[in-house]
Image (cartoon, rainbow, N blue to C red):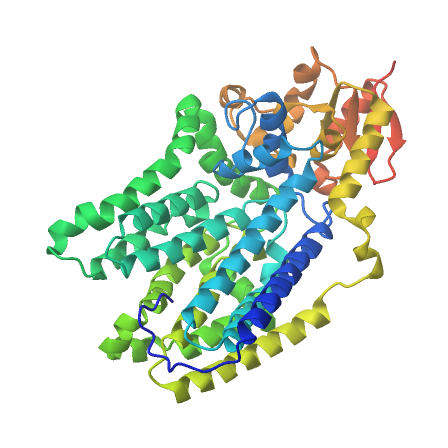
Length: 529
């Protein structure tokens, strides 16, 4: 994707073409940003997804009270998203809105990176064809139903995905340059930051380091260690430092959040009689159903068709010229390990390969520069892929007139619900498995419930001593936990599955709380005066 001498024939073009292409670029990228924003703001918080609770509430507690993940409240992932979200939350009283806008920013940044890399890869072509190719690459990814489902929520997908792809771009650029130490350090820094935001990327250093063995470096293997491997590994270590500090502050709680909890989830699902430990064949069957949509499988089919691996490997000249394509092939198995490792598997886990596939398509078509006839045919096929994916996307896109009015945006609705709760309660702590809503109203929550329903629902599976050490609450010790610090209100109605809120409702009833139905939904039990 980074070609020093492309060999494209110089194409004469009208002097106004660069200006027109620049205007079109600005208009197109603004439209892409609006699409990302639109898709994010319309995603319903309840009951559609409750995963955002565990990312948003700890970030708000850090921003307003300085409470650290793991040490002061349960957090069930690697921690970088909490730090990033807390920074933007300090700028406003809103809670969900800045968290989602952060995800929108990273989702848009990834698409913009794809656009500019694609445009640079065809830099010896005329401005208008360069724009069309770059825009097509972006639309191919933007039109994917997996991309639409995954991006824009306040969870740990957009930020690490952008960082991992940026590391891929920097790494590819470093391999083809002589003064490469800084870029290799930056690629390690971005990759380390991705891993410490989402642990499913933990296997990616293997292919990143493996490609350095194929890099031409004077002095052989002895020279590679200080000039290639050391800068990249240094970047990985520097990126991991904040996470290592949190581990040092509370190793038991860190281990619970990143390992023990996920093992408990399997036991909890088994207790409910739900599928827990899926076999690889069951996961593959699920993936096949997800990728059955044209917008998901067409980009992958296009990449495999354009970049047929046996043909690339047989042709040594093409092998070196298509370095990024080989890099994508090396990456994909390790990306898929992170996608398939969790059990059960959810569709958002399968999004991770798609951005790398989009970059691979750009790279392989750009590398066809010595055979213009073949490249033109590939570009026509790319145009057909884009048209097919966009046609399917437009048919499925949820377009409604009310979507254009900000009062219908889910983060603003959630904030209004928080203000309604504050009007009823006035002040004090709210006991709930939906902590975003009281936080939107400026009310306090119990830090032990910052993960929403997640830590709560499997805490009973731990021995009492370990539960006390980790600061976890469950139905059996709820009354004792609240005895010295009773809540001003109990908010329920958002986690109705599996009877998760039964103990909260029972507490409210037995202690004389008065129920009030909220306009947003749910029920607020208010403490007796």
